[in-house]
Image 1 (cartoon, rainbow, N blue to C red):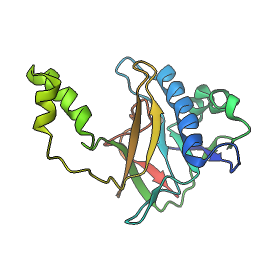
Image 2: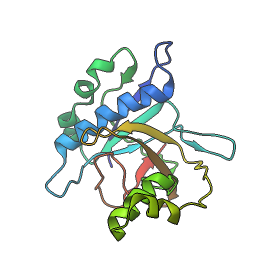
Image 3: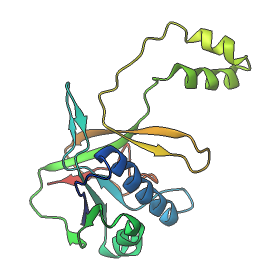
Length: 194
């Protein structure tokens, strides 16, 4: 990853940070869907330079960086176009080269914890061809789980369901590959940290 641009969510009284992340990331996701290849791979990865995952609280911060191997890829994506309707709420920098001096690399990947027994029961009922009530009994004693990982609440455009996109950060020693999902996340590809 040789080039990046940075998106900063601006503080305001109209929208809280969580709602703004939902709107901004929905637009970024839509843009990534437009540029994905036949295998649904995207050449742009995301990072959150203010990411904190602690015992008391976890946040993504108010900055997001988009990384690509070359300047042309970020230029073709045109973040300003995708975020145009949110221009009062975000600031998008120009495309810049990644600094030579790095802190390291990190993998930002989607985490899908099993937290909702109703959702799990629906899936179980379909997979095992049993009624929803029977499936729900299978998860009856499941205690609520607190997930410390920061997330963005999104809305599926196909099912109209809202869901949490939990984003897990893992520090690694080197970068490899350049393949990301339509959320700009990857379980194997690292992006620079600086």
